[in-house]
Length: 314
Image (cartoon, rainbow, N blue to C red; front, top):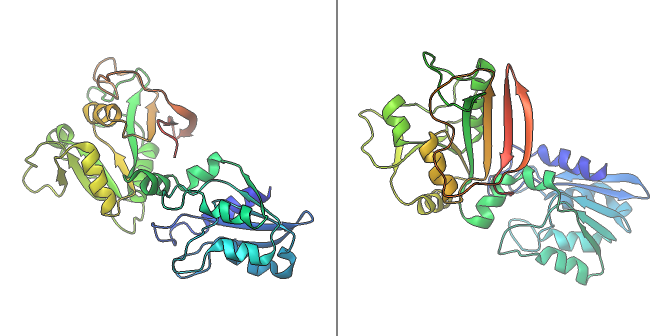
């Protein structure tokens, strides 16, 4: 209950927190009662742990701190959270996940244990998923890559005589995904066939994602896409250096296979329409070997079904 509340609090920072920082929520519990809550609300403001400890006051002494991420141990714009936890007299810390930053490497927990604080790490999937793009960006030096595809029930990505595979609700969801992504990309085959705009439309997007084309040019005259012709891993590292944390792939089967073969896809979003096409390509071209998927889930989106799965967990 208390940890679930910490996850809820962390979400209050979404859209307010600078992307270089994770979402974090914290709850202080003493004798079975919540005595303090906090969340990170943006640059220059107290971290979640500190906000919760301030709210708890003296009631924090001897209490348990539930927090969605390992407390920080380094000086940034604010002092280390571990110092505040120790000074407040917290007896036990229950954390959702280890900080994946290789520069941190569990130092927050080490400092707390050295001070006599009991530590429990839940390795919570919900906690890791909450900051999935940030976790991959900070630990692997590349954007979190999601491959989105729409297909029929017989596994085709085209329907003869129809522009669309899926329904209106699914297409709106795609625009929401674009609006939530730092960059959207297709392959040059899709560019030559469809000349897509890749903009987020009709969903009140505050800003448009960067729009990319992977492959060999040239781009068509008037195209507003950025051409990325280098080796995929190098291009992703370059994008990460430029602040791109999340990349949505909307390319065709060839681009998807290239990313999957290079082990550069983290998540799959497959919109399945209740239609039979009877012909056409599948969602992924030939792969050197099968790819195992994890955390499969499904949800209805209008008349379609959205399947979500992870190739790599964040």
